[in-house]
Structures are given as C-alpha cells and as structure tokens.
Image 1 (cartoon, rainbow over the protein chains, first blue to last red):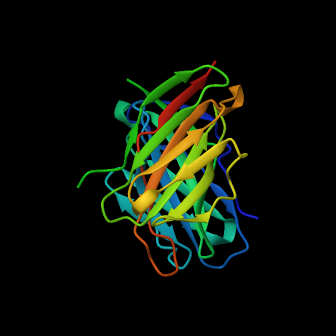
Image 2 (image 1 turned 90 degrees about the vertical axis):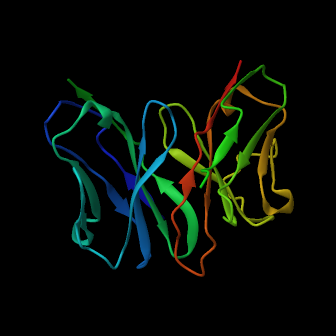
Length: 114
Length: 116
C-alpha cells in the first residue's frame, strides 16, 4: 500500500526564519515519483517539484530546497529565509509507475508572521 | 497557456439536490483526474480519465457520483442526490499522456461544495 505522512499539522515561524516541512512515504514499488504542492489562501494547488525514485540529488530553487533520502523514505522541504507570502498549506504526494493517482499527505499549514 | 479551470468556484446546495461540477483541462492533456478534500483531511483520488475513457474510478465513493468526459475534452462530475458528507473541495487535474511513468499533474482552483 502507498502512504504519505506529514506529521506536522501546523508550523508557525517569524519572517526570515528557516523552516523544514517533513514528508515520509511508504511504497513497495521501486519506481515512484514524489511531489510537493503549495495551496495558498486563494485555494489552488500549485505544483512545486517532482522527483523520481532514481534521482536522489537534492534540489535547490531559490529559497526552496528539497532533501530526498531513500534510506529513510523521506522527501523534506526547506524554505530558507521565510516570507509572509510563503504562508500556505503544503502537500507532499506520491505516485508510482503502476498507478497515476496521487496519494497525498494531510498537508502542513505554514504560517509566517512578519 | 491557460491552466486547468473549474466551474463553479463555490456551490451551496441543500441535501437531496443535484450539483454538476465542470473541469476544463490544459489544452492537449489527455489525462484528467478528479480529487476531493473533505475538511481537514487529505486530498483523495476519485477517478482518472484517459481521453474520454475511465481509466480508474476506484476512488468514487458511491453511485451518487457520475463523471463524464464526452469527446475527451472537458469533464463533468455530477452528484445526485447530494448528501451532507459530500461537502468538500473538489479538485480537477490534468497531465500529458506518457508511456509509463507519471507526468506532473496540474491542478485547477477547485470547487468548494457545501451541502446543507
């Protein structure tokens, strides 16, 4: 069975702090894909990143970085120098080679205060 | 390029009524998905179209839900009759058709359905 766990329900930080959102996944498939989506207050789901299971290189995009570790089945997301505009619900998701449907975690609500 | 659009953005109906949600995918995307998020819970898969065919409808909660994608373009999701537990946000997503592997799904803004 596939499962995604985001243990942090809500995180509050002050602007300019770094924050890491945790994501732990379960799958028996050897080929799978991991995603992060952002849901700002306006409601839409915005795609942030997609990684496949054969690429464990960490990725950095501006203030965002992702740490993929197969050994711990984790795909954590770090925001450096957080800003108020980063306030949103962030979802981690998984799908595999054998199924196109996304399995989502319950989301982490990030609040960044000025 | 226009993104995934959904209509309406909000719908408030009474128990027992019928509601139809519409999704227009990104042009050229053969895959179309419906998902639902009930308050405070995870986003759950409902079904997947490849062009006009239902590829996977394992997530449809019951036979009160009917999804169609005539002509392989836009899709509708009808709930008839609506029940209180159907309240939530219904998301539509689309992606390119790829042979094996999972292409990125791009989501619409969602339709917030409230059943009173």
